[in-house]
Image (cartoon, rainbow, N blue to C red):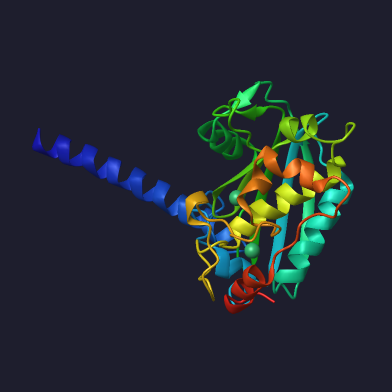
Length: 262
Ligand SMILES: [Zn+2]
Ligand SMILES: [Zn+2]
């Protein structure tokens, strides 16, 4: 009887060791040496990777994964503008790559940020790995669930390397009579959300001088700066008509430079 129990335990232990050894072997076969299922590097708070994105000591390359359902792709001009913006401020000597892919439609009228996180879990394919840091931008076919008559959301940065763009809302507010070109509004919102991933304002990238609009969170108090709070709400729209896309003011630029950017 005692022997029998002992024997079963031995079999169990051997089986356990075998499974453990098999996992180890998988790891050895991954050329990067990283666990491909480990997403923890991309599941931190907004601003946590500001220095890793701006400086080149940890990561020399950047890849931006852009996903959208059928019929909701951003303008090519928007992605070109985003690439110029990244190239202007980030030290990535081995290059910045933008990868777009169409994904199957989500089909909801509105999305909460928790739902967006779940969609990212299902669809994102590029994660930070060896010398490459990855950003994920999801364009969705609906509005933000929390929106109402007093609140319009065009985009939200929700992890250290992730942001959502409410493309349906962006389209409703652009391209028509008296409205800005769609690429202008898209560019403003995409670059603004990337600004949050870069730690602006005072959220991962320290301020060189005080310019935080504390009533509106991690935003800049200069009203024509890209990081002014109204850029991610509907309020920016009329300002964009007949003018160029907002850029970072000197104080935001100084902050990025002091945190490893250029
Ligand atoms: Zn913002
Ligand atoms: Zn600013």
